[in-house]
Length: 594
Image (cartoon, rainbow, N blue to C red; front, side, top):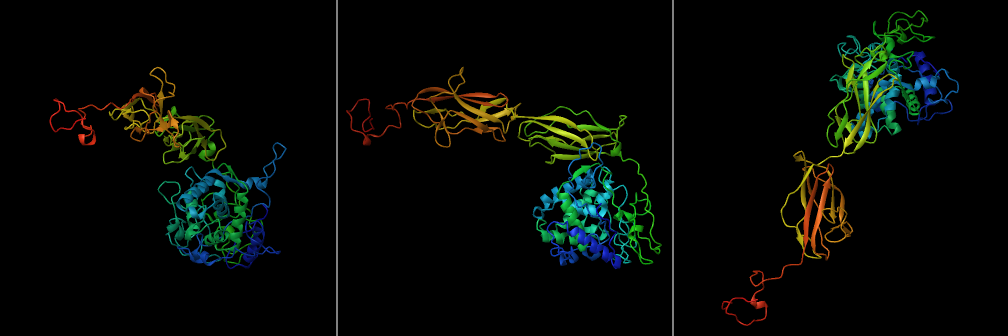
C-alpha cells in the first residue's frame, strides 16, 4: 500500500495530524475534488448541514456514528498495470487491491440494480458502495463471508463511550453489537444499531435484516446514500451523501479516492482472498470473533486511560508499542473445498415461446474426491441473444447448495425470441470451470385452423369483398395465441405459388399484394385478415392460410358480375320511375310494371 494511517479518533492531537495527512494525500486522487499547492481541499468536500442533521439514529446523524474507520489509501498507480512478460511474476499491489471478493462484489452490484429500479434518479454506482466497504471493513475482511453473504464473525467497531470517540449509549440492548452499555458500529458497512433500526434492508431475500450480512448491509447503505432525493451523479450531492455516512473530510476524501480507483477497473477474486485491512473495524471484535488484523508498526500515542482503536477498545493505560497480532488460520470454507461442478440430472431444455421450460438446470458441487459440498453459492447466468429469463424476470440467479450439495436453478420462462441460448453454472467465490447447458426456444404452433364466419366471400369485378376472412387457430384443442401465420392467394389447389390475377390485398401504400407475412394470431387464437379486393378477372380463386406448426386452411373466393334484375325482383324500380309499357293481361291493373 502507498500509505498506512491509524484510525482517526475524536479529541486527540495526533488524530488531527493523521487526518490532515490523509486529507492531503487522498484529495490528490479524488475525482472532482480540487486541491491547492499544499494539498488542501479547495472546494466541494466540507462537512455539510445535510451530513450532520439528516440522520435518524444518533451518532451525530451519521450511519456509522462517525466511528473510526480503516484509512489505508489505494496505491498511486492504475489498478490495471501492464502485463508482465515473465511467467510467475508476483501480482502487483495495484492488481491485488483491484480484486473484490466475489460475494461482496455481487452484493454491491445487486444493490445498485435494486436502487436503479427503486430510486432511478439517485444514479448510485456500485463502485461507491465498494469504496465505502473498503474503507469501513476492508471488503468484509477480505470476503470472509458464508454462502448467504453473512460474515463468519461479527465486524464490530470500538465502544462509542465518549472516551476518545462519539458517545452513543446502548440502543439495541446488545442485539446487534453484543454491548448492552454502549453502541458499536456493526458489519461490513459499519452501521450503528440505532441507524440500522430504521435503515436496515433485506438484500438477500432471507426474510431478515442483518447488518453483518453483506447483501443486507450494501442495500441499506445504498438507500441511506440515496435519501433526500439525492442525485449522486452530481459531485456536490455525492459529497453530501458520503459525509452523511461519516461526517469527516478525511473520510470523504478517502472514499472518493477508492471510488476513483475502482472506477478505473476491478476484478472478482475468490471469497476469503481479498486484501486484509491492517486497521479495520474488526480490530475491536470481541473474543472469538474471528481473525484480528495486525496492529500498526508505530502505534499512535494514546493518553492513559483512553481506549486504543488498535487494541480493541481496552481502557488500560498505554504501555508503548505492541507487537503485531498474528492472525489465526481459519479452517477452509465450504466454498474453498469445492473442486468442480457435476450435473445433477438436468433434463433437456426445450420450450415453446412464451411458455415455461418443463425441466430445470441442477448441478452439484463436489470436492476433488467427489464428496458433495453443502452451503455453497452457485450462480446461474443466462448467456446469449434471448429474452428468456428465470422466474421473476432475472437473467441471473444465485442458489445455495442443499445438504446433498445440489443447487437447482429457478424455472426458466421462454421469451418470444426463438433459437438457442446458454445457461451457465459457476461457483461464486471460486475460479473454476463452469457447466454450460443449451436451451432452445421454439416458435408457437397451431395444428388446426377454422373459419369463424360462414358469410359467402363474393365480389364483382373491380369491387371490394363485403366480408373479411376471420379465423381461429388451435393447438391440441386449445386456443393458439401469438402464432405466426401467412396468407397467400394461390394459383390452384395443387399449385401453391402466388397468383398474378384475381383477388388481392393492399399494402400501406395502396399497392396490390397477394401474400401477407408477419401475421400473428391474437391471444385467443383469432386472426382477422385485411380487406380483399378484386381486379377485372372473374372466376373462383383460392386463399391459403398456413401457420407455424403446419396448420393450413384454404378458402374459396368468387368474383362474378352482378346478376341481372328480373320482373319478380322486389328491388326493381316502380313504374313512376320508368316509361310506361303496353298493358298485359298478366299484369294486374294499377300495379307497377318494369
